[in-house]
Length: 114
Length: 113
Image (cartoon, rainbow over all chains, first blue to last red; front, side):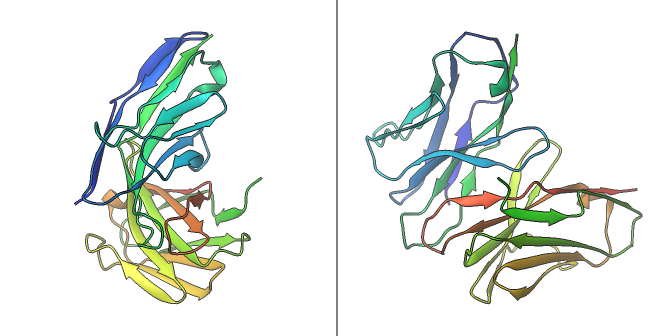
């Protein structure tokens, strides 16, 4: 079956430094890849998605490239802020019109210190 | 802006009791879901409901049952709660059954004493 492996947290870093959260996936399909973010007391919300291989997604300074050859989708941000403290989930979904079951990674807690 | 609403926010109960959680989405979506999120933040799909078709995750115990009156509402009932049911229950919706992103509610935190 499908699986997603991501950086085990917590990841603690200082404001202004760079962040990388690794994500690798396994699937027999051509998936759509997602990054979700969950702030304290809220449900997960979509950060961005990338449906096609070799394309990049980005939002709020975060970005990730869908690397089909390496089966990776690492999340990066050049300079984090305290407000980026949250849990980040990498997720894999089937290609369009093939069902909507998302496979989530374990979630990576990121703590940004001022 | 929240478009997936869940009630209650919190619920504390004793082993063996029955509980029911409500979820409503105002996005006009056709598909709704229930997830369980454990203390380690692991997300597990429990149910998917699309146009009156229920898809059950085989690992969900029988004491859990979803209930839907229309495509905007999907409730979750737990007949006889057990300590391992303590978790956050997240409701989500998506536009359709075709690879679209899911929108989550804020969750209901259940504590079973």
